[in-house]
View: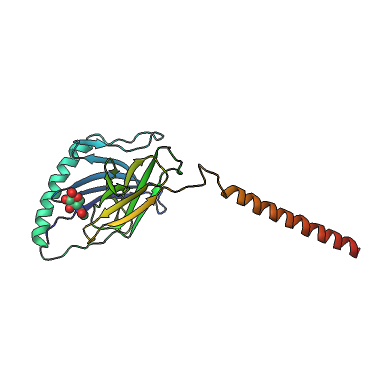
Length: 238
Ligand SMILES: *[C@@H]1O[C@H](CO)[C@@H](O)[C@H](O)[C@H]1NC(C)=O
């Protein structure tokens, strides 16, 4: 068995007090063809090294005070060298041991925002429970391959498996069918999830609210009738 898999070295998992306020994570990993060097905080990506763009990326939302790690990219490059050396050593030492493999335990597809026709939105394909990292995620629209999706770096779950999220910007049009297909070392064929853009109550109120109205009105009338009945009965007894 070739050590193609991402070997992961947990460099630090730090928590504050018994009931952790925050949990900080650092992942350094590599394979023959791939590498990861990232920092996370409370389940979110704070920084990762982009070895193609040759710099650190800080995928943080605009509403937080930026957290930066000066010099981390150079360190990440050095870490990759060490990681690849280690892989060679482990490959020799463990050549006959088939590495553990877990196929993704769940794939979920959903939209970032509530769907409104013609309004820009993002499709999210969330994959979790796999080992080793990473997964490949590809997207189709009406059976045709689409490009332009992005995927974050693998994040470690508490049980030692990984999760990853792929995103595809799209503009919902009635009847369009999207799919995300997940490839992983432990899968013989891709796991696929479908999202269909359906007529929703949001842009076309249609029958939904009026049914509610009807039910509400009926319940109200029943209430009035019952109330009147008991009122009359009550008066009769006194
Ligand atoms: C993911 O895609 C790359 C590039 O196409 C390929 O080399 C690799 O084997 C794929 N990984 C999996 C798990 O299918």
